[in-house]
Length: 334
Ligand code: ASP
Image 1 (cartoon, rainbow, N blue to C red):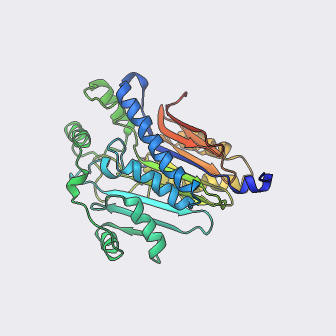
Image 2: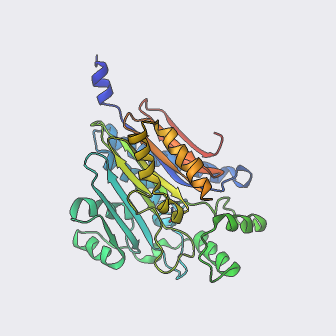
Image 3: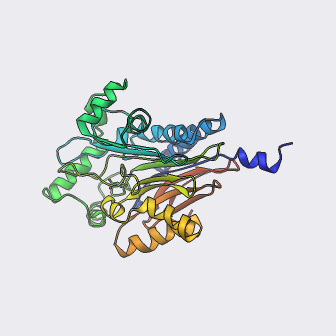
């Protein structure tokens, strides 16, 4: 029989989010709800399988995110939102908690799975963040295939852009709250959550006790001028440190950057000695609320405890914890 110490060594866990925002059960069809739960479960299983066969947390968070990037349901990869310029420009980042190595890409348009490119930046370059066409040159140099940018066209995201352009063509839609109200009034969409922040993220603990965090996004609808949010920014959208925790965020990027959300939560755990839940709530439910910023995080402690905190009506999320229990959820109370 394994000793307690051996059992502790083999603890693995993974947790994910698929974006936070105004997600109300009243607006959701049973079919769509089921599709979300299924895809969240598939992502969790993909990541957990890596951990179970002794793989690293870095590989596990990528495996989970790839499932969500390949799904139209989330604002990342295939389901990425459109920019003002009718393009899909994606950002992603990844960080490992053992040596604080990190990689990120911004504004890529031809990479099927931006999270893989962020990992390649971490593992195969001397840099942390690469942007746009030059990031794609790097991708080519390390053997990535390109997809036609048309791959990222989805009717849902296209219509979302058209709606914003009709309502307020020159506005870079940063106030999702205002957008929520307009769309709720119109309610002409089958999507109950078009105004959520549909970024995807994952955190994991592997058998060696190493944490990792990763985040991938299409950013915000109608973004222009090369706008970049928090998702690819280490310390804002993503952070992992074995001494503290792993965090992936989703929400209004401009605020998440200024609040240095992911790093602030880890710092509170380290320097204040508070629990991860207390640290996350202090940032999401207090600091961000004062700033009027909407969003949330998924976090994992060095012991493998899963933590969620969000100040919106919903956040797509789920975990497989250290006991092997799986749970997925969407709304505030679940
Ligand atoms: N944080 C992302 C951004 O600002 C949006 C999201 O979470 O969906 O680009």
